[in-house]
Length: 190
Image (tube, rainbow, N blue to C red; front, side):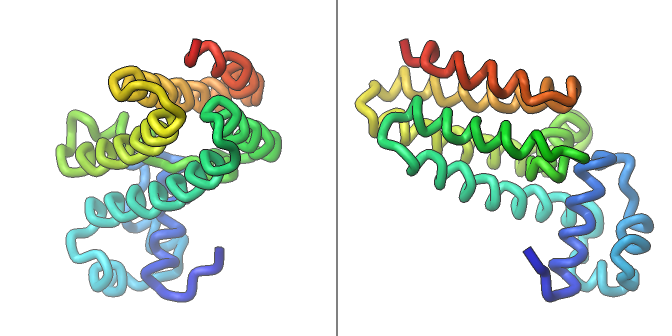
């Protein structure tokens, strides 16, 4: 995706850096240097500085993730098959993995871990985004005829399993954990 504004370019560079280094290890000066953007432009677009920038990075990444998940959940009426389709795509993306941003994984996983106890505003933005993803799974599961209470538990479990399997795959530098989760998804619904 080609960005055509300074603001979009700053978000793109910040997203890449937050992916590869995390929130605390990424400074505004590095974002400015790597983006080739003057400091005044950063504060013009993000008057609250790094906190505003990271919240918008999380939101922007979440929007892309939600659209991606929606497309796969709409790929089949059966939620098991739809979720497996999504995991298949994740596994394919992982095969070309050089850096976490190549997986197109939102950086809010790492940002959530880093900021949960240090910055309540950022934690809340991350929480809202996780809840949005859980709701996608929830609605798909409920629409397949599963009771709401069970659908909620399944949605949270699936979201957590996918999040965890991404961490395992990155740590192992292998798509094997993704493929193993794909095989076990039917058991979630048994």
